[in-house]
Image (cartoon, rainbow, N blue to C red; front, side):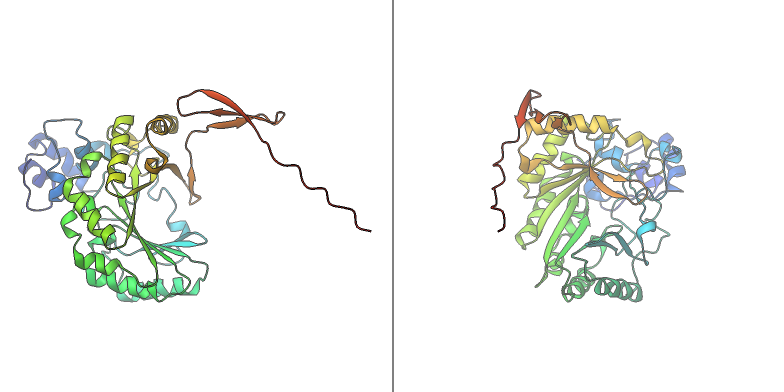
Length: 362
């Protein structure tokens, strides 16, 4: 495994590191003119340059196909802008908001649904004034129960800044849960320090960290140590994974990834169907393929290790589960048809106590 000392950010960096050929670098340079590139040492070290189908390389090394665009693709595929009442806030659901603290990441995924909004040249982080206004919005909306801290990747912020945000949210009585979304424990695990985990801790709120990882090779020993540091500080962790063609669209890979999460005390949460971000058609599977994978996973994994397969409906309509249906019923029959995890079909009929007979009033 090659040791890398710094983040690779240009086509020249990738060529000089040996991760791509000089010929490929010319096409990559065209992509980098449009979309950000950053591959930190921990991820660069996992790439096998001799393997044209390396699943780590596919996630992070630019591909000229990104310059194409399917007619259904959109710069804002899940409608963040539609549900953004002010800069830094997305309020799609009544009881929770996104607080987008930064517009930069330690690594840039080639399939990112916010790829038009993040990277060099974008505003890197909320200013003090912008953050104060966003916090005022949260204070003013008493139905907000959960705040999801995202970006970009909020773990690029200093522990001091993270602590400021944690403390400010801790003082809002109606907010009960803080959830931080990040890739850092896997892609830059050296940044998960005791200072950072202390900054995440809240005296009054429940804190979660949602880890985004897509392949079991990302769950290295040092990544698991970083997760342990977070969890041992009293912070629960869940996972998010994107279903990606050529990366994890097979049962063995997803099974290994979900087992790796659970072994690291990270609860599998979501398996996302690929969003309609520009230049990402080569990553997307069909929904039917995703459902078949979920059906296969249910036959292999306990419920503890199963994520929910979800689609973020284009146009700001939110997430819905789209896993395979195991239950069906004709409207003309009281009998349900149920398919078990091995594909066998069974029947089930409701068996409930009849309503108690109430005596008529005199």
